[in-house]
Image (cartoon, rainbow, N blue to C red; front, side, top):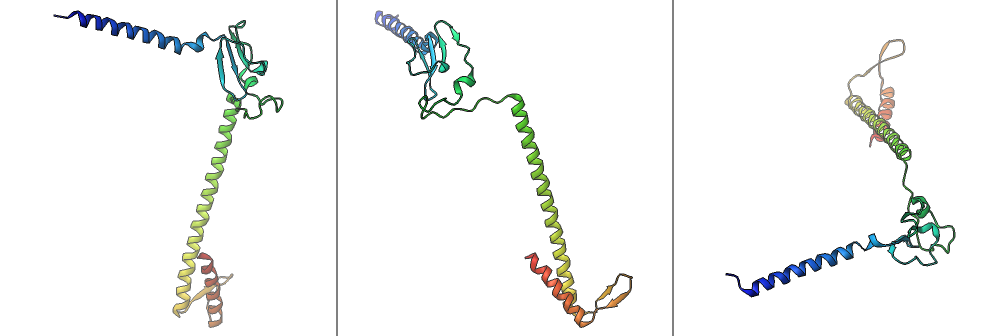
Length: 183
């Protein structure tokens, strides 16, 4: 049924697969076997079985063989701005992580700013609506004044009087001034 060649091929394929898997596992687990971990001047994290260069300050060394873990150096210590220009001339220090209180304060601030924007937008919308009503009323009044029909007006005491030509001209001039602002 099976030839001797197929069995040998299968064994060879199996051995190659096992060898490839072992080799891949070895390469992927290299950072795990590192005894030293440090961050260089460019904020790049390095893993090595050799000590970091002497140019790396102790504050940037995260793990040593003696500690077999973190050296007690906090994230803030590692990411703080360099003390001198020589320490990291081209490195930009990342921002420190925010606390929950800082995030909450930021949220409250954004919420208040948004409420102020909404209130201002509402006031502007109401003012625009009022202007539109005023303009529409002025246009209607202008048509009435220009039509030539008699226009009456009531004074402070409630007495009604009819506008003469001079009063009509002043009223028409005022209405046109209001309409000009509407454009």
